[in-house]
Image (cartoon, rainbow, N blue to C red):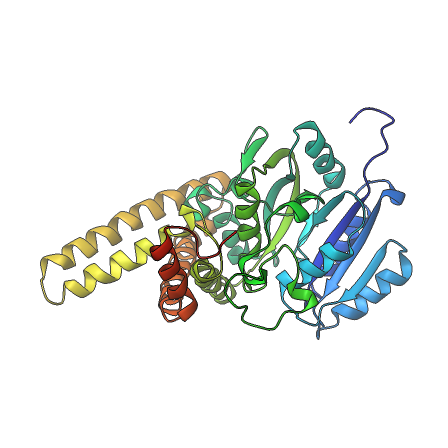
Length: 378
């Protein structure tokens, strides 16, 4: 942007629920980010938190005139986003995860990138850091930043030049894209009947049927309109990852589950190929091992698959340990990588079972098969 140009007004939208351990770091990073004080506002949409988060939010709102807190009776992230987009002001909306902390200058750099590259959405890199600085927490953060752990998720593994991507984290949106992108399937008048009666928090750009993955679903619909999302490498946000193996396993299970369920609620392919690889790995391993109970040679196939995975796992673990100069990391990384892939894969397998039990999924397939088009008429 040219010197002297009046920078766009930005609404920083923070959906949250029960984030008492993280919300202060998040809000402080926004308020001290360096963007002109009169050109941004912070809109926190709280899902009726029960852990003291609301008291923290109200204290910030009293001290800072730019901070506003609104209630999200629906309590889920997509409902919070829909309420927030409706209340947002200005030409730009920056969505910030309550588990994140913005690097100073993040807001200005993302806004500049929107106009410099004619992008619809811009974001910086994600630096994954442990919520608790322990050996396990460090290993989990390393797994979520390594290609063996997260594939080609560019904002996680990082890039050296501005790159067009398929989804974003802490994305900075031109506000007009929310009106331009077609509404999610469940909110359309002529589509499949929504799971719940229409309400104000269901009316918006984000699919409220998707408890997780609503950002990927919106990105898919944005790309279908020709929208472009840009990752800029010269600014970053920090994401505080789980720091115990049990919490990490649960998160991966749930992420895997919600990699499959969107197939019942989204148009087209709601996830990228990288999200399906753990399902393919786990399913192949289980099928070959089960077949080995009947035909013994299949045990060798199952063993070969597991051995191949183990070798790649160890190689990636050595790479992480060498990079971090940490022997303890070398010991922990194979377990952490396995928790990531097996937890996600088994969660996806359970999601597939859940998916095929949903009448809505079969109705979509039936409509697509009969008409050769998507399940919803545009």
